[in-house]
Image (tube, rainbow, N blue to C red):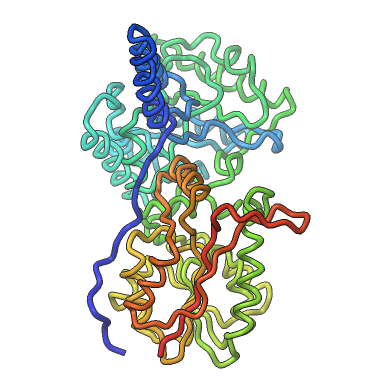
Length: 502
């Protein structure tokens, strides 16, 4: 099959909607109302908003500007140790020896410039099983006051240096845990998540060595991410005292009955990965890569099940009606395989395309455990694959289940998909239906992922199908299933779409 008509691939819409944005909109609205009721008070909401904006950066656990990881699961009865500002020739080797003595794996948030100057130290950190995170290139304490370009370069340059050691950090810790409104878009573009801490020794970058252990242990509890420093004490002759304080922290945590485990185990997501693993800077890929380990459990949660149940009922019934043993099926965005495994049982072959490599790995593991060997796994953006040389096949059927919301131009994608659909083939997908309720869930998602998910109307989908030369068979809305045999419509939150190619 030759190349299809050129279609410009479109990226997901990065839309980092934060609490700060909503608070700002709310403050303006309240001020407008007050202006007509009591003009002298109209400025008060705006002043409060400005104060919040000035104060929020100094609270490392605040979600005011962006989602921030501060702690892990309390059910693990464990904590994680993290060290900032390294590597340092005078302290890092001593620290590594101490951690090895206690069989502890920590996470080191390193400064790019120091990592470039001390390759042996970075190699030592990695060879002893520790993780590495991004802590900017130069540890400029005023980096959050710089422009977006300058901030982005501080992050990307550190990533570049660490890539030279064969690793790609997935976690970024801002200097002193301070964030600003410009940070989240930069992290989304580079596929990083922000992590701060929930407990620290208040050592001010090893300027205050005595009492580190006492201050750290005072309120330490299960799930805490402990932040300490791996840098030269500012007072001469205190390296030994610093090392003793770190050892007292370790002993004190264990005395409380808490285990010290790797940060990745505590928060349930990877801190770094090998270079060349196929990681994409696509924000959706980064989000689902991070979520992959807990995705199945999340999908079983009560709130998500309310919307998933109508979709599951519709999909499982429909695919049995049209998928046959001789069919080759393309599934877009299978995730961890909610419907892929059933498609594989019904069809001759299923090609599963997903932006998240970790999701595909979990899906492959599931399939092999069920002795399903007729699934092809392809990582990448579906539009780029179909317009390039990555997926030059025709399929009997093409399916997608709640994965097309990331695509801004649904008409262009449907046209592209139709070119890869064989005669008599079926395009079958579910997607978000435009409604009042769905709009608010879109806002909630933009606050969680920093990505705007698109909802569609029935006329919009019908027009896109006809323009692509497809005959609509089913365009049906579904409401929420609240249990007890009741389904609340709420304008229909889900669209079920089935179309055939003549």
